[in-house]
Length: 256
Image 1 (cartoon, rainbow, N blue to C red):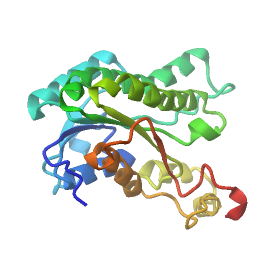
Image 2 (image 1 turned 135 degrees about the vertical axis):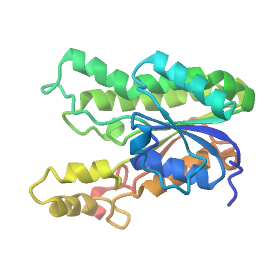
Image 3 (image 1 turned 180 degrees about the vertical axis):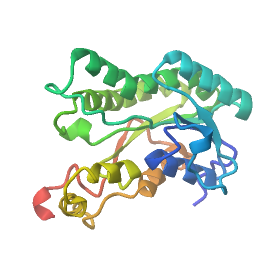
């Protein structure tokens, strides 16, 4: 299916690895002009050489000024922005016992602040071009996880902002949706597994609880949903939360 994304300028934050990398690769394959924004330096970029249209912009998105500057740089190099994928973030394990009030606020900013910053600075271009925004969330915001108050609060805010922005931007025909992963096979997830005495056994335990096929979600499966929501193939879809998780969040665990 042609998603009609050819030559569209699309920003993907956290686009050099994991889920963000899969999203960037798919959008590039669809012919989009992808701006990959990440802390990773040019020397450490991980996308394959075939993606020559992938444009890298190094930025620390925890400050609004850095977000303003990177949007300005992208427009200068690639042209007006058609769509934005807010994806960057990490689970920093700031809980009630393990954290502090200061670390909690810092976690909120690190994981949710730049979603607002980037969308705010992209907005004039999105308004001109009837753009689209996809926010990547986390199932922890609806299930809880334990010992991760900051991250969960940030991801919960992101889901609420998805609905809020969908309403605010209706007059400009800008669609805003969220894609919510659960257990995804990424390098970061593999690193987490290595913290257990028997990583393969832990993986087996987790996979067994995922109803559909008892396996982790592939990053490419998240990317497919994101690309669809960015495209005009989803032209009458806004304000929605899409769970791409093999039924992990909502289906009865007793069936697995």
